[in-house]
Length: 262
Image (cartoon, rainbow, N blue to C red):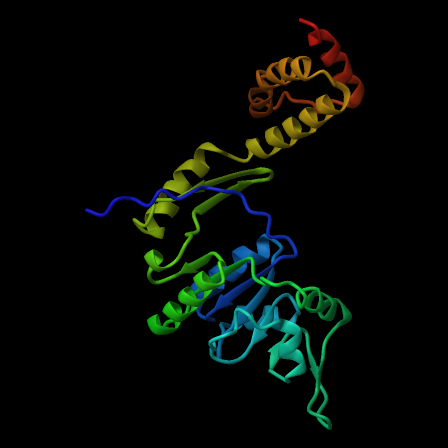
């Protein structure tokens, strides 16, 4: 039996960072949706895509290069692809008399911002139906030091995506280290039943309370003590019994006074 890979769980900030998805089928679509939810700049390379992905491209919510993946795509800049006339769908308007393509200023700016980065992509997903293409993508991504996920053979990649539970600021992830996404999703559903919607308000309030404490309590030891007292509050129970009332700043300051120096 193979030893489980000791994956390192992390929370990655993908906002306004470029991510490449190679493939346009249903598996690729799931990857794309997750990346858009993370507010990444999504680039898709595939001759064909699902109707949902095409709609997103038509709306300018992602960049679609309508062709096969080619060696060197991970090193080429998006601005160069525009200048070379490669067909890229990104809220584009094609002029019939010139054959040229124009984009909205917002999309042009996002592409231009990528052109000077030595390592353009934050993450790469190989999600085609062709194992040879996925293997090529994985090999090139690792050559450039870019984390890569391979949909059909996770062992060829350098990271896997866990099943995710979101309750506002609460993000919980589940991985079975290669035992399969179906099992991961099943475990995630069970956890989701435990971490119900009440946690969203609870975590939001604790975030608000913690940052207020950090702003007004400057001594590190005193701050740690007050934060420990905050963590012990029965806010979640109050929320579940419909008894919780949001604290204003005056209430928080009065509560802090009670615990400072204790």
